[in-house]
Image (tube, rainbow, N blue to C red; front, side):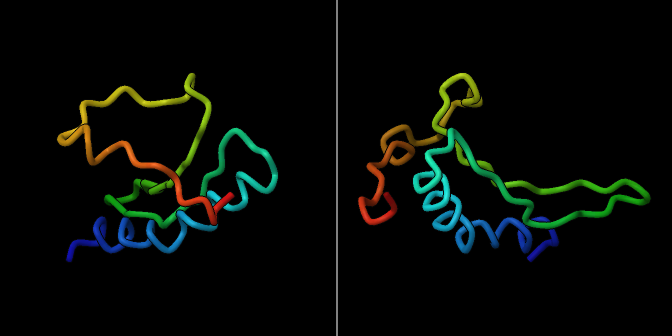
Length: 77
């Protein structure tokens, strides 16, 4: 697995905590740094952000629209 995939693989371990904190604090969003990739002397930080503010949504073209929209697990709220 590449270094980028190794860092991205940490997202599932962080998403639940981000969502719980966001709902508990009634925040619009929450984020965490997952790690840093090195490209020569350049550092690239990999981040995970959750937001419920539509103005912060990233325009995207999901490969599978049906799979990309899921109800939230009620135990997170």
